[in-house]
Image: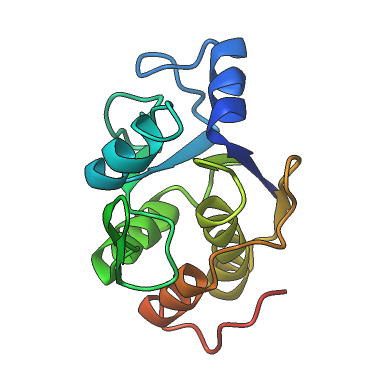
Length: 171
């Protein structure tokens, strides 16, 4: 059974640091998906308002590492007081699904987004559904900080549509 761990960005960084994982040292039996905000929202909200940053732990993509960027909204595009936010696109979903297909044999998955409750949870729940339906692989999703109740439904629906799954039901 695959274990899929979902973390807020800060916890993800702690797990990576404690294991001494980096671009040169990645466990072969694991896959990593890092979801960060796009530059406009990162600068206008995270840096200016929250005084935080949102950078990928891994500096580049690798065969078992995928860095992606889109904002945490429930639609394609939204005007906010901090700038224009863009949600996950079909192209983002395709890229992530291709990554899942290429890494379906990995025993441990580590996912993060800023808070670990919306984008990464949608991705983890999709991985569970997709790998079970397509490959009959069981996945256990572990979200120790926030659980799985606050997932981004827009993203989950988009994943299911792009992957041509029979429905968008979470199980």
